[in-house]
Image 1 (tube, rainbow, N blue to C red):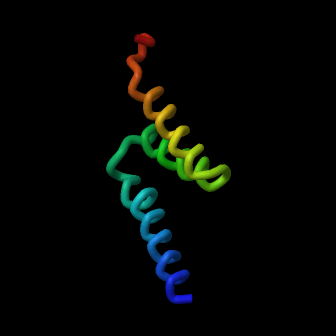
Image 2: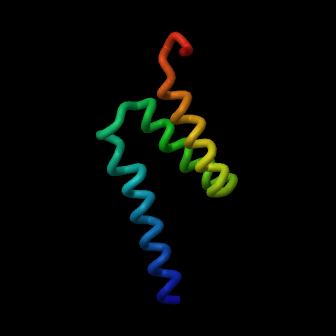
Image 3: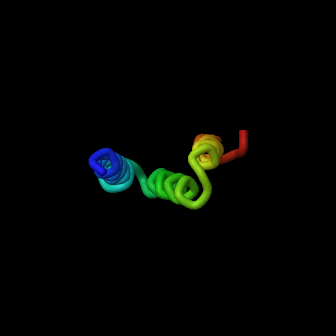
Length: 67
């Protein structure tokens, strides 16, 4: 039971660090990407969330003219 509580507290701390602490440090599009990665990891699984994050970040870093 103690191990489960420790894992729960660490999980809550990671979510707080990923969502709450970054809200004023990144622009709105980057924050939307972070939230969508968290949702993808919650709905599907960790590997899909990582792949989704890689694809999303690659799309965000492309130049506006498509090159």
